[in-house]
Image (cartoon, rainbow, N blue to C red; front, side):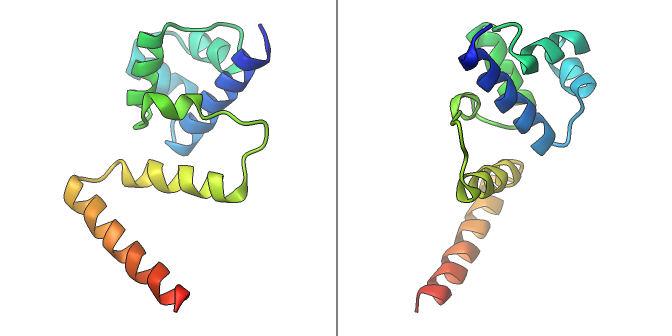
Amino acid sequence: MGAVEKRLGRRVADQRKRAGLTQAELAERIGVTTETVSRLERGAVVPSLARLEEVALALGAELSDLFRVADRESQKDRAMTRLLAVVRRGSAADIEAVADVAERILGHFRR
């Protein structure tokens, strides 16, 4: 496969690791074999959009997150991805609370 498939596979692997899942755990969540997940992460196969949506949901991510592939991700990009992965696990009220705290903290530093 080509470079795009490999970058998509690396992105899935990165998201899976951030979610704290093994390939076997992700495979179980989406109803495929561990080898299928391995092949996806290596860029050896390109799943359908429907399957990618299942992968994203199993990882607690949005489908669009899997397509945010860049040759080089900045430290800020990695931090934002990590923050989004953590926040998505919470309820709407939890997310609002985190946003309020972040605004207060960042506002404090800007003064």
